[in-house]
Image (cartoon, rainbow, N blue to C red; front, top):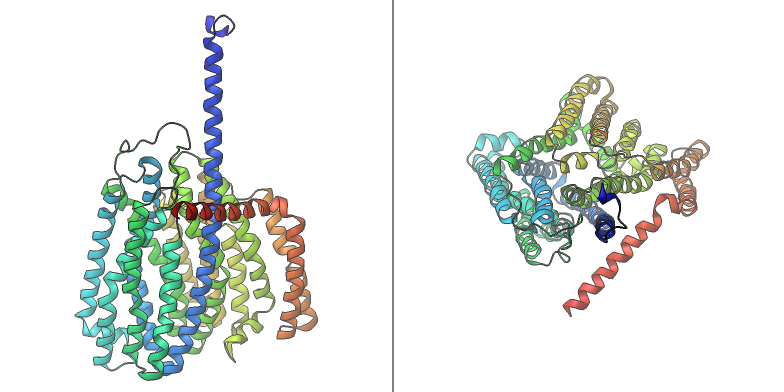
Length: 555
């Protein structure tokens, strides 16, 4: 009872002061961790968005160059090989890249990076072994080569497939190493290699080949050759991240977010069993993700016509372009959320998820509104006849509103360690798409394939949002509601009014887009405080100041 009388001795006052100091320090470091997470997400998200734009533009240019040089038949063979290579290389990662994002960022927070070498020894050899085995299967299976490329002579098909097989282990290991660099909190290596460097080099290499020596094998080599430089860049970037001070590599700073000293070496290393119990389900869910993109094309080719498959591909490119910001933010936010969760800062991680979702909704929903208002006009950019996919574009635009509306819910689920939950939602979405597609495609063609994919998107994202809620994360707040209201109210009325007045044509699209942009900018300024525009700009400004300080230290 005497302890209740602080006036009797100085100890009670000192204890209270110490407690208050500790609480203040914990609060301050938590706030600092939140600010760093927001800043890293803003900078990485916009750099990733720029990289995604370069990637998309380079992809369009490459398709144009290859198609012009080889015609539809030869270009189809090249891109069939590219599609198979992409699917196999992503499957051969075995989910190790996502696992490294999670476990490297956690290890940096808990041990300062002491466990990263062991994580790399756990992740890289199995991915290398799997990709080498698949490469051997492709290299020594002539029948498989003919089946993959039926439009080419048997000898040429075997040569093309063997060329892709030779590059498979290099490309797979490169993706795994880039996953580790993302775990350090920086998206620069991944974006620089996968979204800028390799796509641009492919166009640069393909242009002279089309003019001097066009051929399926030569242009396949042009697509594959940048993988060698990409692997070297990935290794050098990871090496730099491991040797750089934590403040420079994009990882966490030296101070502990919850007070106390960093327990370097005090945390047990991640056992291989724990690593692969997370990575295994993620490997399967990534296969479902990739298959979802191509299922509609396969069903239309088998149950419809090749023309319908081409229209559906164009529709898919457009809606994918609308999610570029979401994908860019996903690259940046994953390691930050994992780091905050490892430090026990669940509220800060929730804040980062809410804030990033608000920005994704604010800038992505207007684009889908415009696509839904003028679908035939936008599709006409691909050529005559593509306007038949207008209804499909409207259906997928509506589904993507749900997709971006939940933010990166799947990323939160994964970074919380629930890869089996992610597998369940991805598997459910794929099952819905396949079942609905088999029934809808023969009846409604391109629109049926889009409806099936849209249903899968809604199922996957709705389930992921519910799981995020179960983890204790709240996505919608006052700022989210403001973002949704601005995105809809400022864009939809002028866009659809222009559609009613002038029709779905270039003139209506230009006027509707102009009015929508003006209304959006005005609303963005009017509601800049609840939308978090100031926090966004402060994060960019701090990032620029941080770069300047590091440059000064280096000089």
